[in-house]
Length: 301
Image (cartoon, rainbow, N blue to C red; front, side, top):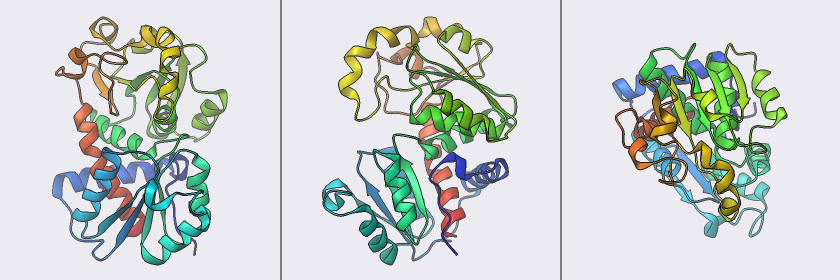
């Protein structure tokens, strides 16, 4: 039987997503035992990482296993060695592979050739592990995700795509507000809506419209990792979407503030907002461990 992978939110049904969140909540509340004792997770990373790497390493440690980090200098996926060779070698020595890469096709190629589960730790297409942590944070605060209104400010990037899909599955009203030409594509919207979940996704170029009645306001960097060279040309377009006190005032007074980090303070979000009592940014970061433990248990346990 081929292994089960977690390449995308699309790999989950609404029931499976809810089950992962249930598992993560239980792990966070009660802790966990060494269910993965003796198992090894290979971390094949082409991009720098703080939260993803640390969360996987801590998750495997708490579950009784171990994570082995393989950075770009050790691996050189596609240059030093073909992906298919790396996937097959890692499958012979590890029980799972977490891939953090640029092209999403690399994740898919790992999944095609690996004989163990492959987890998408981030690709240009999607950041599913981050979306799980975000939904866990919202569920902790609101009890249920059904009817939560999540406003997202910024580019329709990998984080926005994963959040859109996860929101529809979970019953969240997801509103993406982006400068013209930088939003989710029609294809992205179609994929999110096709999941059959009870939530909805809409898009606007008016940030204040998105914040109206929002339960939580989420923002991200204006230029994703690897695209920093485009930032100068984006500043004018993205400036009206900066999450400062004035823009946040368009949302209800109890709306939460979210960011996946790292934050470029003073660009997409101000110090005043990210350090406010409404911010759950560091809850999101912590919850990466608990949701990644849930994913690891579901695939390797």
